[in-house]
Figure 1 (cartoon, rainbow, N blue to C red):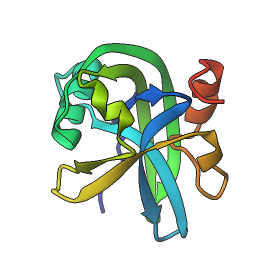
Figure 2 (figure 1 turned 45 degrees about the horizontal axis):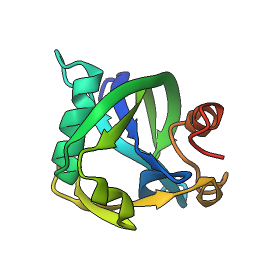
Figure 3 (figure 1 turned 135 degrees about the vertical axis):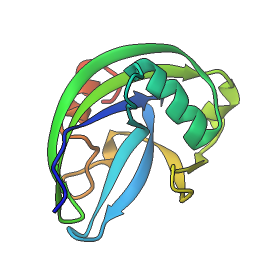
Length: 148
């Protein structure tokens, strides 16, 4: 039996013209689509802002600047039938290459080598059946006027 642990996570909100960049994935257990910004786990001894720079480079092969903390969320959830608990540092940053903002989608790679497509989405793309995760993120972004 595996021990349950709280996972420290850093996510980055790249925003442009009322849209944010998100990775779409599917929870087969609950039969629903979820959307999450780019980011990932914070490694031991790594500052969360540095995790953003590393994760964006690893996942998208892109560099960023202007990394700034927007807030912190605590997320308790079930994914793929397993309970999860994350403390999430939510950041804002800007891509060094401005052409990224004109692309409709970007191809990324997870740490296990699996590829994914990141897309620019606005608040109408998210619903109760297809939420933006972690819980509370959409409200945080609305309060900061980053999503309508």
